[in-house]
Length: 475
Ligand code: NAD
Figure 1 (cartoon, rainbow, N blue to C red):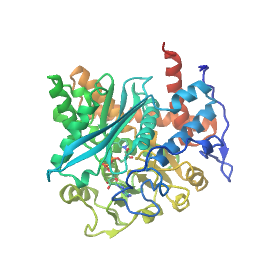
Figure 2: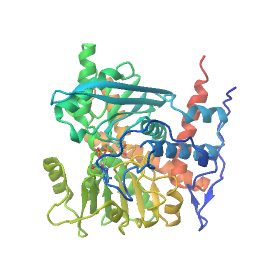
Figure 3: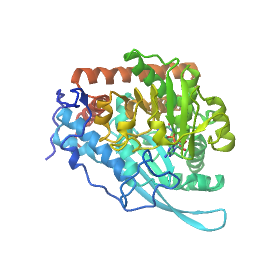
Figure 4: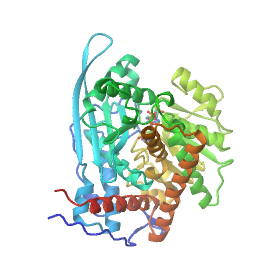
């Protein structure tokens, strides 16, 4: 029978060779759930070699590495908290999983069947919340991992949501705008039994954006017969989106990095920054670091990268990306790839692409003082102790990239009350929320003698476990 005893904290930790605490995997993690899911096509469009997105084992499903990492991180936090077995069992698996296959007519007249997913990991603290990803390697395991991370992230920044994620296995870069709209409208229709302002609220993620959210909002509203703006967040401002949402994740990266730097006696102004990924998160983070007076010296994306040691003109790169969909070959820059980017001697390395980027194989090459996880799961559990031994401060994903869900929460609140907050109000509240969460993580790491990732997960798991326990078992 499941028992629900209160979680207790203890100070057990793993020590690096230099005696400092690390987030090294525990014995339990070594027995994390084996990879699940069927084989799907590999990571199209992603270059091979160290620093390659995900890079699952040959033959393994792409999401297998992500769910293995998410479970290892959860187990480490649960061990640290000496979490009750019943709670552990509840929190280790998703509460609800939805898989769908749906046909879409392509521009050439052919019909293609797409696979889509939505996973609600845990909704004890509120409606399910999480992005929708369009990527060739998206599969059920990847969505499971991302949904679990969302549960912890929402709890860490104290927004009243549970964790969810969804996605469609597709390459949006290979589809026309009309085809992407058709995929989105059909997927939204398939998701209708699940999504809604009180039940499950999608948002943008890799390969999706404000336009995708507008199509979902319109589809759901057309079926209902009236506008339901609160069914998604990350909408265009003209459709009830929030001021500040487009930049919120990148802004949160800057706030949490600035806080980590302050704690190490460093300053953002004049600091050197390298960024992997130049999409929703990476572009905003690079631009906002640049505006804050930092020197962004290198950026990579899926097609390559650019480097300029005297500092990149980030606003010009943003314009070039909008106009040509690429930053490679920008005049006044030299090319750079991911392995070179990871080895740069910079103050801050921002990972804002995909999961599984810094691994046991390349963690030893990282020379940045601060590793900022703008992406979800960009560092594998095996890389954590190596980074700790090198003295790299990690701002963990569930803290670093939580700015997006914080402002999504503000958007949801504004939609419920038909309010429009000014950018100043949104950013002020975002900063306060991010700094409070950052403070909690570093204080917990100090108090328990553990690394920042385990501290962040311990706080989050404790909060979700408490909610599950207070609600009790139904019936
Ligand atoms: P996006 O699709 O807008 O951008 C992804 C970027 O990564 C693109 O620039 C792409 O070219 C680049 N990329 C892909 N593979 C790469 C590789 N091998 N090397 C270098 N660059 C590569 O996606 P996004 O919304 O910015 O999401 C990025 C990460 O941030 C994901 O892990 C996502 O889950 C996470 N995240 C996003 C949000 C959000 O608000 N969008 C919020 C929290 C976390």
